[in-house]
Image (tube, rainbow, N blue to C red; front, side, top):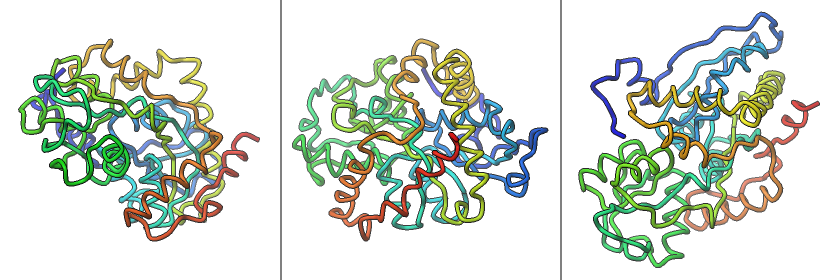
Length: 331
């Protein structure tokens, strides 16, 4: 697979780099509480953001009388930063970015959309023959600094496997630029997600050292700004009802889901086979809800972030997490 940048038009480039793409109108059955608001929806353009992309293409939001604008970025930590700046109302990112977002901007978790531990890998260039994380000492490692993926690697995975901070050269880079850097041999390894890992493997560019699933399931939150929560509780319930509809599609209509998401990547100029795509999509475990043990998980992650001085205090989870909205959406 290769990126065909010459085949991308201006609108596609904007969509891949974080600009607003389009606004969809209200459905015929308009809920009075939803009419007054346009949801500014953030999402990342890797596989972590594709359930949200499907939500926006499925018709589920229109069915609930909701309108929205979409804001695409390469990584969820960028969506989190947009939300802290109050440029976006709702967005997805993993637990570490959510905790930082709550610390910096009071962001509120509405639901866990998916778990993505199987999507995340540490990979090295195939020609180097590296088999262990500790063998990356002194190497150049591409990392989307500030992302949950990066934080887990830098603060936990690396040190646990004999690769402490300072023992390698971190090269700051967006995840969607890493394959080209690996191919061009400007970096030796990458900390990346799907579909980029499967593409790099299929093209013989990189091999897997380890994936994250054995150490972290990586729950991905759909979060909201506190301003949006305060002003639009009815819209949030309708929005989460749309997520319940989408969850049913992932379970019962996987071909429709696959076709929609595959269309996203081909529209951005990716020449990716269906086999490669299906393998990458299959690593995303979509099951919106509140999984057992979640609070213990994010408490542990918050303690790491506090130790690393990335947050100022452990969050008050009663303020940071609002499972009551999900309950209302299922009533």
